[in-house]
Structure formats: structure tokens, C-alpha cells
Image (tube, rainbow, N blue to C red; front, side, top):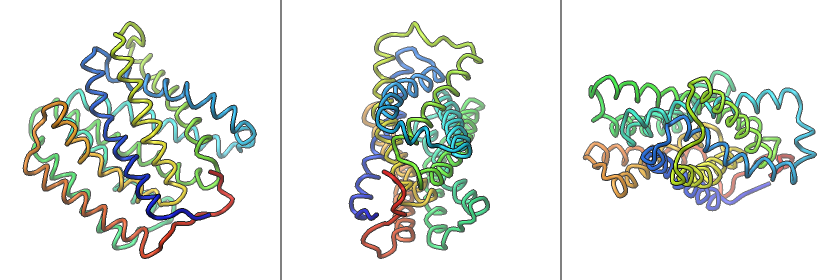
Length: 306
């Protein structure tokens, strides 16, 4: 089965734009009184309330056909996703939008290493160059946050932990999506992530209810846009592209988030941010050349259902 390169890249652009809205919507939800862990949990609750019934109606036979190994992978992916959200969203309470999104977007480094040593898929020299350039640009963007105190450091550590967890999530998705439909994969993984986050909230003894309607409205928007549109588009792309390249594409998120943070939150765009953003985009371009080459279309095995 083939898909045009233009459609693939346009879909990825749409996904990145949707994901870039996440940090802004999280800030609005926090401003309405909902704590970070509650935001993470409700984000997946709303997404799962939409996707799980739909998946059961449309993909019931496929869900029943899942092997024990596939269930284990789906559960692991969902736990990684839940921990990713818990650590990253918590980081936004300590550090700036730009720094948080940049550090959590260091996932391509971990995906590249994991694909090399665990999946036995070493990246090409051109792909490594793209990773290095984009990752360096991310460091340049966050340079101004260094040495700003313990709270800032805590936020940066949480965001980096989020990068490690998202790497595991993407690598598992790359394996499972080769054989299973997008609907089945995202419904079950988001559902496991929801359970993971609810457990974390209960352990932290944070209330799930009693917040303003505005808080729930912002989180519903978070579920519909960044989660169902953004994350699902990235998972869709895993059927056609390597986990490393999909992870590199997410490095465009800080650029979009930084612009939105400037327009909506009044956060300044510094020279280091502008230079770093240019480096990130250049790195993504180099990586895309390595991934797509001169092919006009991208193919995957025909047995993989959409």
C-alpha cells in the first residue's frame, strides 16, 4: 500500500500544529484552577470516552484477535504515555513553555538510540546529522533557562523524563502499528494511559472533581486537538515512517508553541529562541531527506490495516 509523500508531510504538519497547542491549553487550564496531574488525567479521560466506544463498535473483531504479546505491548505503550504526560505537564508548573516543550522534545535522541540498540535499526549518517542539528537547536532555545534556580531545574528534569517516556511510547507504536489499525491502537493505548494517570492522581491525593467549568472546557479542547488530532496523526505516520523520524518531526513543536506563547501568553521570543528554531527546522529538513530520499511515495506492508 502506498501513500503520497505530499499527503504524508501535510498530515504531519497538521499533527505538529495540533500538538503545539497543548502547552497553551494546559496553561489556560492551570490558570482556571486545575492542577497539572488532574489536567493530564482528564485529557486522557475525555479522549478515551470518545475513542473506546468507537473502537469497540468498529474494530471489535480486531480487538478480540489481539495476542498476549500485543496486549503486553499496548499496555506498556499506554503506561509510557501516561508517565510522559504526568512528568511533562508537571514540568510546566516550574519552567517556561519554550524550555519545557524543547526538553520533552529531546525524545528523538532516545528513540534513535533505542532503535539502534533495541530494534537493531541503526540510523543513517544523514539522519544522525539531522538529529544532532535539531537537538542542538533545542538546547539553544532553552539556553536562557539555565541556572535560574531549583524550581527551574526541577521543571527541566521532569520535562527530560517525559522525553524518555515518549521515546518508549513511539518505539512500541512503530512495532504494533505495522500490523494493527490506528483506531485499535490509539483507543487501547490512550485507555491504558488514562488508567495510569488516574492511579497517579489518586496516589498524589489530588481531587478529580470540583473545578470550574472553564477548567474542564480547556481540558476537553486539549483532548480533542492535541490528543485526538495531534498524537493520533503521529501514530498514523508510524505505519509509514520510522519512529526516529516521527520523533524528529515533533521537534517542530517548540517553534509553534513558542510563537503561540508569544501571541497568547506574552512570553518573549529571544534571539537564542529564533536561532535555535532555525536550527531545529534545518535539522528536520536534513532528517526528511534521509528518511524519504528521492521516493515519490512511501510504502508499508499491505497486510497492515488502516
